[in-house]
Amino acid sequence: MMTTTDAMRVWVGCLACYSEGRLVGEWVDAVDADTFIPCERPDHEEWWCLDHEGLPIDGECSPMYAAALARLLSEVVEWQRGAVIAWIKEGNYSTDVEGLPVLSDFDEAYCGEYDSPRDYAQTYAEECGLVPEEYVWPTSCIDWEQATRELMMDHYTTPAPGGGVYVFRTF
Ligand SMILES: [Zn+2]
Image 1 (cartoon, protein in one colour):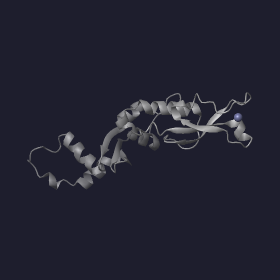
Image 2: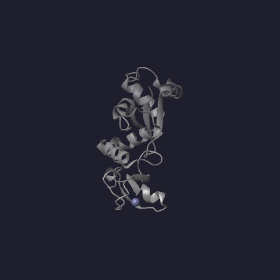
Image 3: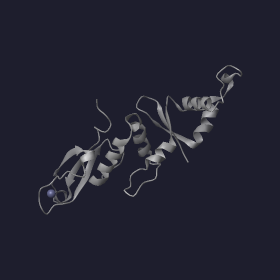
Image 4: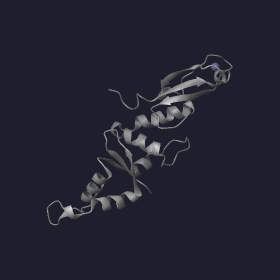
């Protein structure tokens, strides 16, 4: 089975060759980016990731950073990896000394995967005990559109692969 980590690949190239107008490098698994040596010339010693696939960043980066980010993502339990990648793409996080996203921010922000913002609002209301399990009051009268709108004022969502949404709290 193809997992999200298998799909994280980077093209590591030699910067000196690049500045001479030659593309010398290879696609490698992102987790191996910091140990890969793309060029054998002794006077060439600076490598750079000029392209990547599956990493939640824009543009180029250092092989060290690509590998560290790939390792960080590979440590995330698989069923949450899609949500973590979506969260990194949104960019609402603090970073550590290496510039990597602090995953405890994710744990605080992530509310779960739902069919829609309204599905989240209804589930949340049930969990809070706002909606009784037995019929005591006509919950069909609740204006869920309005309730969802207000609840989502301090939340945001990103599309999830299954057609639903990942819901995050803003702080
Ligand atoms: Zn070179």
